[in-house]
Length: 406
Image (tube, rainbow, N blue to C red; front, side, top):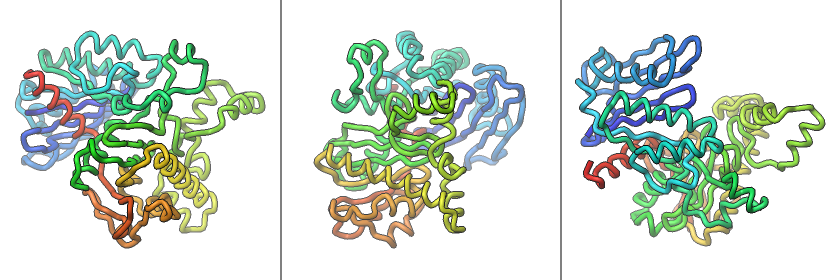
């Protein structure tokens, strides 16, 4: 079964084509700068045939339909093609960032699904219009092919009200759908399941704290396979310090800045989302650059690193208290999988809670596969589990299609 995974954003379309029978990625790529003066496509054909490995070009990309037509052209019959005909694609899985409270599982697309995504655009203004355009365009280009939405917020729908509600006027929260939704849910669910497998347990019997650290960062408390808390909120801005996002701050800072610096709501939003976090403290948001500056004696880079790790440690402690049980701390995503210094600093001093890092195992953790980096006898294990959101979307799409006999 060939499944095409699409992530349609406001100005880009990311894609991967999977052969589910072999588990292989056949091709992947990105169409970006949609509706701008000059767009671009980057396409990679993965090993397995004798055709050209990659392709990139700049060209106008008028809209999402034009973007997906470029994708189809790259997948079929060109020098980078990997299938002979569009009919070989048996299903399409869409990554959806914001599903509101409507979706708690991957769902077959019909008109009601699209209408629900349209209805919650006010709480997903940056992503949902692009998602809807991707779904509607795929329906035209792949007529009759079933489509499935896999929702980032779905995994967090098991949180209890005391975890997801904000202490604002209740009627206002209900009217405007203000609550904690959380994001990166597909990643958290995937790595929680993989961690349970690594530990030789069923997911529903395993309690873990999953730590997704990249340019965007979030953490989940997963108790016996169900999410009971997550660090992101109504938007992806809340929680941990991130590459350019501030994470949790005193909300009164915003009117203070407006009064003292004359900043508009839009300027405040830009400041918090694009000019804060690691970048706000030391001027760069790539952790590799921060480490290089730390080694050169840059005090601001050192401060940014320590602030970043402190926030992770802060949430580890909070989630251990919330869960009351925990088998493992699980690091994933770009920083979580590859940065031994960040992992060590985030867990430093937590031995009294039963978290004991093995320095050698942490420093030599192999890339690309699950491993344990805690010391022998550590009551709570520390794991590194690579995430693969696209594969998770493909597998969930396949499961929906097979369950419905489509």
